Structure formats: C-alpha cells, structure tokens
Length: 112
Image (cartoon, rainbow, N blue to C red; front, side):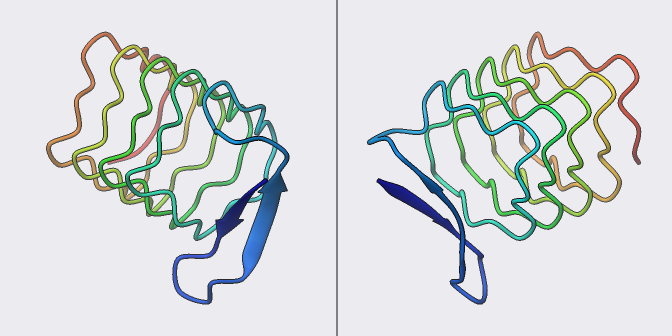
C-alpha cells in the first residue's frame, strides 16, 4: 500500500493498493499539492488528474500520460518527462527548469 501525501500538511490524498506507482492508474485523481518528488511514475496514467502545486521534482515521468492534466504551479524541476504525453495539459507557472522533455508530446498544452 502506497500513501500519496500532501507536500505541506502531510494529509493522505490517495492510497494506492500496490507496492509501486509504475503503471499506476491515477486518472482523474485529485492530487493537488501532492509530494511525489523522486518518485518512479514510469508509464503512470494521470489523464485528467489535478496536480496543481504538486512536487514532482526529480520524478521519473517517462512515458507518463498527462493528457488534460492540470499542472498549474507544479514543481517539475529536473523531472524526467521523456516521451510523456502532455497533450492539452495546463502548465501555467509550472517549473520546468532542467526537465528532460525529449520526445514529449506537447500539442495543445497551454501555459507560460
């Protein structure tokens, strides 16, 4: 069992009945403010998920599906987003410094 906690309050936002978050089905999950830094999320499905203000620094997000996800104000510093699908994702004020976006699909993504 994995608990995903809020980055500041430490409140449990979601419990996942698994020993890993690789390939996790997190579609439409409310993960606002989640602490997911350094987490291996390879091939996870975050379609339509709310990840506003989440901490995804240094996370492995290779091949992750983030279509239509809300990543507003999310910390993606140094995240591995190679081949991630970010189509139609909201990226307003997301921190993408040093993120690896090689091969990432960004069609329709909005943000500054």
